[in-house]
Image (cartoon, rainbow, N blue to C red):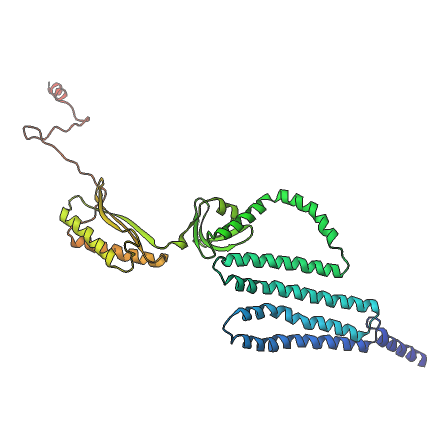
Length: 388
Protein backbone atom coordinates (compact mmCIF):
# COMPACT_ATOMS: atom_id res chain seq x y z
CA UNK A 1 0.00 0.00 0.00
CA UNK A 2 2.77 2.42 0.93
CA UNK A 3 4.58 1.55 -2.27
CA UNK A 4 1.48 2.44 -4.31
CA UNK A 5 1.12 5.79 -2.57
CA UNK A 6 4.81 6.48 -3.15
CA UNK A 7 4.44 5.64 -6.85
CA UNK A 8 1.44 7.98 -7.17
CA UNK A 9 3.34 10.76 -5.44
CA UNK A 10 6.32 10.23 -7.73
CA UNK A 11 3.98 10.54 -10.73
CA UNK A 12 2.58 13.80 -9.34
CA UNK A 13 6.07 15.20 -8.81
CA UNK A 14 7.12 14.09 -12.30
CA UNK A 15 4.10 15.79 -13.89
CA UNK A 16 4.75 18.93 -11.84
CA UNK A 17 8.38 19.07 -12.88
CA UNK A 18 7.99 18.23 -16.62
CA UNK A 19 4.27 18.49 -17.38
CA UNK A 20 4.36 21.84 -19.21
CA UNK A 21 6.47 21.54 -22.39
CA UNK A 22 9.09 19.66 -20.39
CA UNK A 23 9.20 22.39 -17.73
CA UNK A 24 7.72 22.50 -14.23
CA UNK A 25 4.03 23.31 -14.03
CA UNK A 26 4.85 26.28 -11.81
CA UNK A 27 6.85 27.85 -14.62
CA UNK A 28 4.02 27.18 -17.04
CA UNK A 29 1.52 28.88 -14.74
CA UNK A 30 3.92 31.79 -14.23
CA UNK A 31 4.42 32.14 -18.00
CA UNK A 32 0.67 32.09 -18.54
CA UNK A 33 0.22 34.77 -15.87
CA UNK A 34 2.88 36.90 -17.56
CA UNK A 35 1.09 36.66 -20.91
CA UNK A 36 -2.28 37.48 -19.30
CA UNK A 37 -0.65 40.47 -17.59
CA UNK A 38 0.59 41.85 -20.89
CA UNK A 39 -2.82 41.17 -22.47
CA UNK A 40 -4.44 43.26 -19.74
CA UNK A 41 -1.76 45.89 -20.36
CA UNK A 42 -2.86 45.91 -24.00
CA UNK A 43 -6.40 46.89 -22.99
CA UNK A 44 -5.05 49.56 -20.64
CA UNK A 45 -2.89 50.90 -23.46
CA UNK A 46 -5.87 50.95 -25.81
CA UNK A 47 -8.40 52.59 -23.50
CA UNK A 48 -6.31 54.73 -21.17
CA UNK A 49 -3.03 55.78 -22.81
CA UNK A 50 -4.35 56.14 -26.37
CA UNK A 51 -7.49 57.83 -25.01
CA UNK A 52 -5.31 60.43 -23.29
CA UNK A 53 -3.35 60.99 -26.49
CA UNK A 54 -6.58 61.47 -28.45
CA UNK A 55 -7.68 64.18 -26.03
CA UNK A 56 -4.34 65.94 -26.45
CA UNK A 57 -4.28 65.87 -30.25
CA UNK A 58 -7.93 66.94 -30.45
CA UNK A 59 -6.89 70.33 -29.09
CA UNK A 60 -4.64 71.06 -32.06
CA UNK A 61 -5.85 73.05 -35.06
CA UNK A 62 -4.96 70.42 -37.66
CA UNK A 63 -6.62 67.02 -37.95
CA UNK A 64 -3.50 65.34 -39.33
CA UNK A 65 -2.33 64.19 -35.90
CA UNK A 66 -5.82 62.82 -35.17
CA UNK A 67 -5.72 60.71 -38.34
CA UNK A 68 -2.19 59.51 -37.57
CA UNK A 69 -3.17 58.44 -34.07
CA UNK A 70 -6.25 56.63 -35.37
CA UNK A 71 -4.04 54.85 -37.90
CA UNK A 72 -1.47 53.81 -35.28
CA UNK A 73 -4.00 52.66 -32.67
CA UNK A 74 -4.19 49.09 -34.01
CA UNK A 75 -0.43 48.51 -34.43
CA UNK A 76 0.34 50.03 -30.99
CA UNK A 77 -1.98 47.58 -29.25
CA UNK A 78 -0.03 44.70 -30.82
CA UNK A 79 3.20 45.63 -28.99
CA UNK A 80 2.08 44.20 -25.60
CA UNK A 81 1.13 40.92 -27.30
CA UNK A 82 4.63 40.57 -28.78
CA UNK A 83 6.18 41.49 -25.43
CA UNK A 84 3.93 39.00 -23.62
CA UNK A 85 5.04 36.14 -25.89
CA UNK A 86 8.71 37.04 -25.43
CA UNK A 87 8.68 37.37 -21.62
CA UNK A 88 6.45 34.32 -21.21
CA UNK A 89 9.06 32.32 -23.10
CA UNK A 90 11.79 33.74 -20.88
CA UNK A 91 9.91 32.68 -17.76
CA UNK A 92 9.52 29.16 -19.12
CA UNK A 93 13.30 28.82 -19.49
CA UNK A 94 13.04 26.63 -22.57
CA UNK A 95 15.90 25.10 -24.47
CA UNK A 96 17.84 27.22 -26.92
CA UNK A 97 16.02 25.94 -29.99
CA UNK A 98 12.61 26.74 -28.46
CA UNK A 99 13.83 30.11 -27.25
CA UNK A 100 15.04 30.88 -30.77
CA UNK A 101 11.59 29.95 -32.10
CA UNK A 102 9.86 32.28 -29.64
CA UNK A 103 12.34 35.06 -30.41
CA UNK A 104 11.73 34.60 -34.13
CA UNK A 105 7.95 34.75 -33.56
CA UNK A 106 8.37 37.95 -31.54
CA UNK A 107 10.50 39.53 -34.28
CA UNK A 108 7.95 38.52 -36.91
CA UNK A 109 5.18 40.23 -34.93
CA UNK A 110 7.28 43.38 -34.60
CA UNK A 111 8.03 43.44 -38.33
CA UNK A 112 4.34 42.88 -39.06
CA UNK A 113 3.21 45.74 -36.83
CA UNK A 114 5.84 48.09 -38.35
CA UNK A 115 4.63 47.52 -41.91
CA UNK A 116 1.01 47.52 -40.73
CA UNK A 117 1.60 50.94 -39.17
CA UNK A 118 3.27 52.20 -42.34
CA UNK A 119 0.38 51.03 -44.52
CA UNK A 120 -2.21 52.67 -42.24
CA UNK A 121 -0.30 55.94 -41.88
CA UNK A 122 0.25 56.22 -45.64
CA UNK A 123 -3.24 57.58 -46.34
CA UNK A 124 -3.15 60.58 -43.95
CA UNK A 125 0.40 61.32 -45.12
CA UNK A 126 -0.73 61.40 -48.78
CA UNK A 127 -3.74 63.53 -47.88
CA UNK A 128 -1.41 66.00 -46.14
CA UNK A 129 0.91 66.19 -49.15
CA UNK A 130 -1.91 66.57 -51.69
CA UNK A 131 -3.67 69.21 -49.59
CA UNK A 132 -0.98 71.73 -50.60
CA UNK A 133 -2.23 71.72 -54.18
CA UNK A 134 -5.48 71.19 -56.03
CA UNK A 135 -3.96 69.03 -58.78
CA UNK A 136 -4.87 65.76 -57.10
CA UNK A 137 -8.32 64.71 -56.02
CA UNK A 138 -9.79 62.19 -53.60
CA UNK A 139 -9.66 59.44 -56.22
CA UNK A 140 -5.91 59.93 -56.69
CA UNK A 141 -5.43 59.70 -52.92
CA UNK A 142 -7.41 56.44 -52.85
CA UNK A 143 -5.32 54.91 -55.63
CA UNK A 144 -1.96 55.89 -54.14
CA UNK A 145 -3.05 54.73 -50.67
CA UNK A 146 -4.11 51.34 -52.04
CA UNK A 147 -0.87 51.05 -54.01
CA UNK A 148 1.26 51.84 -50.96
CA UNK A 149 -0.69 49.37 -48.84
CA UNK A 150 -0.01 46.66 -51.42
CA UNK A 151 3.70 47.58 -51.50
CA UNK A 152 4.04 47.56 -47.70
CA UNK A 153 2.16 44.27 -47.52
CA UNK A 154 4.44 42.56 -50.06
CA UNK A 155 7.63 43.97 -48.53
CA UNK A 156 6.50 42.98 -45.04
CA UNK A 157 5.68 39.43 -46.12
CA UNK A 158 9.06 39.20 -47.86
CA UNK A 159 10.87 40.43 -44.73
CA UNK A 160 9.07 37.90 -42.51
CA UNK A 161 9.76 35.04 -44.92
CA UNK A 162 13.42 36.03 -45.06
CA UNK A 163 13.58 35.96 -41.25
CA UNK A 164 12.24 32.40 -41.28
CA UNK A 165 14.87 31.35 -43.81
CA UNK A 166 12.57 31.21 -46.83
CA UNK A 167 14.46 32.41 -49.95
CA UNK A 168 12.45 35.25 -51.47
CA UNK A 169 14.50 36.22 -54.54
CA UNK A 170 14.39 32.77 -56.21
CA UNK A 171 10.67 32.67 -55.57
CA UNK A 172 10.21 36.08 -57.23
CA UNK A 173 12.36 34.95 -60.16
CA UNK A 174 10.16 31.90 -60.65
CA UNK A 175 7.16 34.17 -60.74
CA UNK A 176 8.58 36.17 -63.66
CA UNK A 177 7.74 33.43 -66.17
CA UNK A 178 4.30 33.06 -64.69
CA UNK A 179 3.77 36.83 -64.87
CA UNK A 180 4.37 36.78 -68.65
CA UNK A 181 1.65 34.18 -69.12
CA UNK A 182 -0.69 36.06 -66.83
CA UNK A 183 -0.01 39.32 -68.68
CA UNK A 184 -0.96 37.72 -71.99
CA UNK A 185 -4.24 36.51 -70.55
CA UNK A 186 -5.00 39.68 -68.62
CA UNK A 187 -4.78 42.29 -71.34
CA UNK A 188 -8.22 43.62 -70.49
CA UNK A 189 -7.20 44.02 -66.87
CA UNK A 190 -4.17 46.15 -67.78
CA UNK A 191 -6.24 48.08 -70.32
CA UNK A 192 -8.76 48.98 -67.63
CA UNK A 193 -5.97 49.82 -65.21
CA UNK A 194 -4.40 52.27 -67.67
CA UNK A 195 -7.82 53.69 -68.51
CA UNK A 196 -8.50 54.27 -64.82
CA UNK A 197 -5.19 56.10 -64.46
CA UNK A 198 -6.11 58.32 -67.44
CA UNK A 199 -9.51 59.07 -65.93
CA UNK A 200 -7.86 60.21 -62.71
CA UNK A 201 -5.15 62.18 -64.52
CA UNK A 202 -7.68 63.98 -66.72
CA UNK A 203 -10.10 64.40 -63.79
CA UNK A 204 -13.09 63.54 -65.94
CA UNK A 205 -15.21 62.88 -62.89
CA UNK A 206 -14.91 62.17 -59.18
CA UNK A 207 -16.93 60.46 -56.49
CA UNK A 208 -20.41 61.93 -56.16
CA UNK A 209 -20.55 63.27 -59.74
CA UNK A 210 -23.60 62.68 -61.92
CA UNK A 211 -22.36 61.30 -65.24
CA UNK A 212 -23.91 59.91 -68.40
CA UNK A 213 -22.33 57.69 -71.06
CA UNK A 214 -24.71 57.14 -73.96
CA UNK A 215 -25.75 53.52 -74.26
CA UNK A 216 -23.74 52.46 -71.19
CA UNK A 217 -24.77 54.07 -67.91
CA UNK A 218 -26.16 57.17 -66.23
CA UNK A 219 -25.98 57.78 -62.49
CA UNK A 220 -23.80 58.87 -59.58
CA UNK A 221 -20.16 57.79 -59.29
CA UNK A 222 -19.53 55.96 -56.02
CA UNK A 223 -16.01 54.56 -56.44
CA UNK A 224 -13.24 54.44 -59.03
CA UNK A 225 -11.21 51.27 -58.54
CA UNK A 226 -8.27 49.85 -60.47
CA UNK A 227 -10.39 47.86 -62.91
CA UNK A 228 -13.87 49.35 -62.92
CA UNK A 229 -15.96 52.28 -61.75
CA UNK A 230 -18.99 51.76 -59.56
CA UNK A 231 -21.92 53.93 -60.72
CA UNK A 232 -25.21 54.04 -58.81
CA UNK A 233 -28.12 54.46 -61.21
CA UNK A 234 -31.09 56.61 -60.25
CA UNK A 235 -33.15 53.49 -59.59
CA UNK A 236 -30.50 52.69 -56.90
CA UNK A 237 -29.07 49.74 -58.83
CA UNK A 238 -25.23 49.61 -58.82
CA UNK A 239 -23.45 49.24 -62.15
CA UNK A 240 -19.77 48.23 -62.38
CA UNK A 241 -18.48 49.76 -65.62
CA UNK A 242 -15.00 48.79 -66.94
CA UNK A 243 -12.74 51.82 -66.97
CA UNK A 244 -12.00 51.33 -70.67
CA UNK A 245 -15.69 52.02 -71.46
CA UNK A 246 -15.49 55.33 -69.63
CA UNK A 247 -12.15 56.24 -71.17
CA UNK A 248 -12.98 55.46 -74.82
CA UNK A 249 -16.47 57.02 -74.86
CA UNK A 250 -17.77 60.54 -74.42
CA UNK A 251 -18.71 61.20 -70.80
CA UNK A 252 -21.18 63.94 -69.86
CA UNK A 253 -20.54 65.23 -66.34
CA UNK A 254 -23.71 67.00 -65.22
CA UNK A 255 -22.25 67.83 -61.81
CA UNK A 256 -19.84 70.32 -63.37
CA UNK A 257 -22.50 72.42 -65.05
CA UNK A 258 -22.22 76.11 -64.23
CA UNK A 259 -25.97 76.62 -64.82
CA UNK A 260 -29.01 74.54 -65.69
CA UNK A 261 -30.92 75.31 -68.88
CA UNK A 262 -34.66 75.76 -69.43
CA UNK A 263 -35.71 75.47 -73.07
CA UNK A 264 -39.44 75.66 -73.74
CA UNK A 265 -41.62 76.24 -76.79
CA UNK A 266 -44.87 77.95 -75.75
CA UNK A 267 -47.58 77.55 -78.36
CA UNK A 268 -50.37 80.17 -78.49
CA UNK A 269 -53.48 79.78 -80.61
CA UNK A 270 -53.65 81.45 -84.02
CA UNK A 271 -56.44 83.73 -82.87
CA UNK A 272 -53.96 85.69 -80.71
CA UNK A 273 -53.45 89.29 -81.82
CA UNK A 274 -50.08 90.94 -82.31
CA UNK A 275 -50.64 92.94 -79.12
CA UNK A 276 -51.38 89.77 -77.14
CA UNK A 277 -48.29 88.02 -78.50
CA UNK A 278 -46.11 91.01 -77.63
CA UNK A 279 -47.62 91.26 -74.13
CA UNK A 280 -46.99 87.58 -73.37
CA UNK A 281 -43.49 87.73 -74.76
CA UNK A 282 -42.53 90.94 -72.90
CA UNK A 283 -43.92 89.84 -69.54
CA UNK A 284 -42.15 86.47 -69.67
CA UNK A 285 -38.87 88.19 -70.51
CA UNK A 286 -39.35 90.72 -67.70
CA UNK A 287 -40.05 87.96 -65.18
CA UNK A 288 -36.91 86.02 -66.16
CA UNK A 289 -34.60 89.06 -66.23
CA UNK A 290 -35.82 90.44 -62.89
CA UNK A 291 -35.72 87.12 -61.02
CA UNK A 292 -32.42 86.47 -59.22
CA UNK A 293 -32.89 82.72 -59.50
CA UNK A 294 -32.10 83.04 -63.21
CA UNK A 295 -28.70 83.93 -64.66
CA UNK A 296 -28.70 87.06 -66.82
CA UNK A 297 -26.74 88.27 -69.87
CA UNK A 298 -23.84 88.57 -70.51
CA UNK A 299 -23.21 85.72 -68.09
CA UNK A 300 -25.49 83.48 -70.14
CA UNK A 301 -27.66 83.73 -73.23
CA UNK A 302 -31.34 84.47 -72.65
CA UNK A 303 -33.99 84.50 -75.37
CA UNK A 304 -37.74 85.10 -75.29
CA UNK A 305 -38.87 85.47 -78.90
CA UNK A 306 -41.85 84.77 -81.17
CA UNK A 307 -40.16 81.98 -83.06
CA UNK A 308 -42.32 80.37 -85.73
CA UNK A 309 -45.76 79.57 -87.12
CA UNK A 310 -46.37 75.90 -86.45
CA UNK A 311 -49.20 73.77 -87.79
CA UNK A 312 -51.49 74.51 -84.86
CA UNK A 313 -49.86 77.36 -82.95
CA UNK A 314 -47.77 80.48 -82.95
CA UNK A 315 -44.66 79.48 -80.99
CA UNK A 316 -42.76 81.60 -78.48
CA UNK A 317 -39.30 80.24 -77.67
CA UNK A 318 -38.04 80.56 -74.06
CA UNK A 319 -34.31 79.90 -73.61
CA UNK A 320 -32.78 80.72 -70.22
CA UNK A 321 -30.55 79.36 -67.44
CA UNK A 322 -30.96 79.06 -63.69
CA UNK A 323 -28.16 79.87 -61.29
CA UNK A 324 -28.59 76.65 -59.36
CA UNK A 325 -27.45 73.30 -60.71
CA UNK A 326 -29.27 71.32 -58.03
CA UNK A 327 -31.85 69.16 -59.77
CA UNK A 328 -34.54 69.39 -57.08
CA UNK A 329 -34.26 73.17 -56.75
CA UNK A 330 -34.21 73.50 -60.55
CA UNK A 331 -37.51 71.61 -60.76
CA UNK A 332 -39.03 73.99 -58.21
CA UNK A 333 -37.91 77.01 -60.24
CA UNK A 334 -39.37 75.47 -63.41
CA UNK A 335 -42.67 74.83 -61.65
CA UNK A 336 -42.91 78.42 -60.46
CA UNK A 337 -42.07 79.66 -63.97
CA UNK A 338 -44.82 77.46 -65.44
CA UNK A 339 -47.37 78.97 -63.00
CA UNK A 340 -46.24 82.47 -63.97
CA UNK A 341 -46.49 81.81 -67.72
CA UNK A 342 -49.98 80.38 -67.26
CA UNK A 343 -51.04 83.58 -65.46
CA UNK A 344 -49.42 85.83 -68.08
CA UNK A 345 -51.22 84.07 -70.94
CA UNK A 346 -54.56 84.28 -69.13
CA UNK A 347 -54.11 87.99 -68.30
CA UNK A 348 -53.29 88.73 -71.94
CA UNK A 349 -56.69 87.35 -72.97
CA UNK A 350 -55.35 84.55 -75.14
CA UNK A 351 -54.82 80.84 -74.60
CA UNK A 352 -52.51 77.96 -75.33
CA UNK A 353 -52.92 76.11 -78.59
CA UNK A 354 -53.43 72.41 -79.03
CA UNK A 355 -53.21 70.25 -82.17
CA UNK A 356 -56.29 70.88 -84.28
CA UNK A 357 -57.58 71.03 -87.87
CA UNK A 358 -60.14 73.34 -89.48
CA UNK A 359 -62.51 72.09 -92.23
CA UNK A 360 -64.03 74.74 -94.59
CA UNK A 361 -67.18 74.12 -96.75
CA UNK A 362 -67.54 76.32 -99.89
CA UNK A 363 -70.77 77.39 -101.72
CA UNK A 364 -71.22 77.13 -105.51
CA UNK A 365 -72.06 80.12 -107.73
CA UNK A 366 -75.78 79.79 -107.11
CA UNK A 367 -75.23 79.96 -103.40
CA UNK A 368 -76.05 76.32 -102.90
CA UNK A 369 -73.96 73.76 -101.22
CA UNK A 370 -72.35 71.19 -103.50
CA UNK A 371 -73.92 67.79 -103.68
CA UNK A 372 -72.41 65.35 -101.22
CA UNK A 373 -71.12 62.27 -102.93
CA UNK A 374 -72.19 59.05 -101.29
CA UNK A 375 -71.37 55.84 -103.15
CA UNK A 376 -74.17 54.04 -101.32
CA UNK A 377 -76.88 56.45 -102.58
CA UNK A 378 -78.61 55.55 -105.94
CA UNK A 379 -77.96 57.89 -108.87
CA UNK A 380 -80.70 59.89 -110.73
CA UNK A 381 -80.86 57.35 -113.61
CA UNK A 382 -81.24 54.51 -111.10
CA UNK A 383 -84.16 56.34 -109.48
CA UNK A 384 -85.82 56.96 -112.89
CA UNK A 385 -85.56 53.33 -113.97
CA UNK A 386 -86.84 52.25 -110.59
CA UNK A 387 -89.93 54.52 -111.04
CA UNK A 388 -90.70 53.08 -114.50
